[in-house]
Image (cartoon, rainbow, N blue to C red; front, side, top):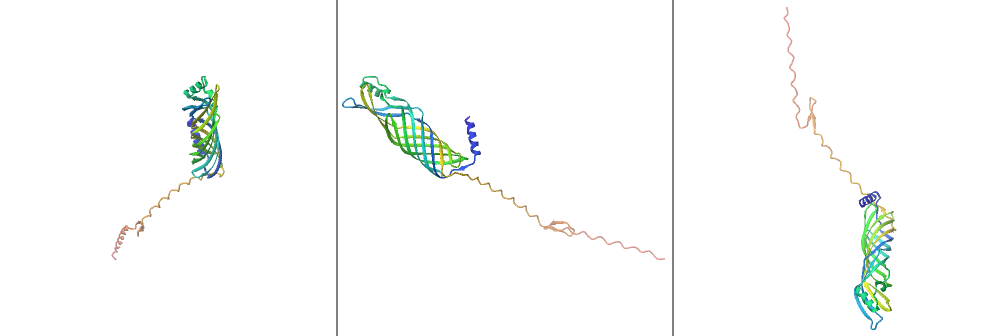
Length: 295
């Protein structure tokens, strides 16, 4: 089936008129699915119900697993030949599937609270939300027909919310995509985006069996998104000029000139470099007539 789809797409591209990508400004919207990678968070736990406050650090205290979420964004940029510069702003949200909590951390909470603590006692929330704004630099080229592609990356800022708290950090993206010209101005496409943030720090406060705790959870956020895109180019794309026809083959060389000839006295035609045949000898004279005797 995949081979049939690829063959059909190739035939469609060949059968479609070619559009040369025009330079100039463009805007677009994109949306699709996001698949966050599990987030490993280092946790500092504070028991604030005792004096002095006790503080314990746990490497990989929380490991957050997500379900597939959604991602929406908008882009605006300018195309310079094979290069594009653009600004991208987006938001992605993913439900939390589960949080694996360090067993020692749960044991400390349970011991301080006088019961067996579970993950639900920590009040870690049910979703992760990330807003991002990046400046992207891309290489963009035509593949032939109406099909083109691009790849590049971006850098900017991300604002994330988790467990009732928010933080922001540097954000980095990796981008690759395909586009198809629906018209001289409008492109539809499919885009892959990788988003990575620097360390985010989320604070939290919760109470277990009357014992008060605060926590600080720090880690990176990573996600992979597949987005459908619709882009409007303010400068219409021109139909690509047909390739120039090959020049006609050179004419064949002229036939060689006929050799010079001469006409001999007997009417024969021979080469000019040859000698005419000798003329035949003259006929012999007639025999004399004999006269009779007179009587």
